[in-house]
Length: 269
Length: 57
Image (cartoon, rainbow over all chains, first blue to last red):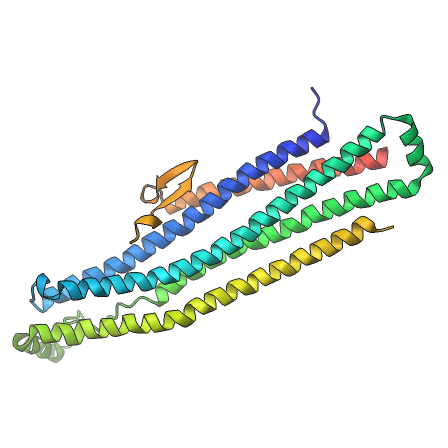
């Protein structure tokens, strides 16, 4: 059986739908995978630092177990907040993209529909005569075809914008995590670069009060950093949301323009 | 806490993302995007055929 152009178009729509569905799944898998490894490595870095500092101050794990767990939990929670906000942004962008993909398919399906109607009409002699004697009718058909083609191309622009934005959001998320790394190299009981006198002072301090030095030189500054992160996250999350809304607004404007342009082209006399 | 991040619904089922290298996921995405571009080119070609059909008729 020879496939008509209409049949070929419908096949393409179905295949595109499958491709786009896999694209969405892979996009989220990549975001989640990069988020997982980054957050895991940051939390592990804190755990490792806790272990090192406890070892350096020669205190048992039991003494600060609850405190350490609390610090880790708070840190994870703050990193999680950032993750959730960026994931929301990606979900919103992907929803816009899916809508554009659907509208693009509707444009193709409508193009097929009017092409089928025209082909059907051309099977009948009276319609052929009608078309020949009525150039206006022919013009209307041509305008509609052009309008659907333009709609198809314009929705492609929205889809491309969404694809770019998704990757930009993912990269910005990873950069943000780098910026909020709370492990301060200065908050260590023993550092590789400490001066002889500093080292001596630290050793003397630890002799007198290991617990106190662990608390003052590590726990307190780390907790302060986590609290600072918590406070900064309020504004940071708002900013991520603002940026997302701004992007979505540009897409809404693009959609409006597509529809206005479509109406103008389709109704052009 | 991070347990729900290490899985994603890809290839028709839930998979452990730890067993997937991120570069492999990027490779898959690149291939699927290439396929999408090809498919869109195909659509454009058919659309152009339809457009020229109307002129011929």
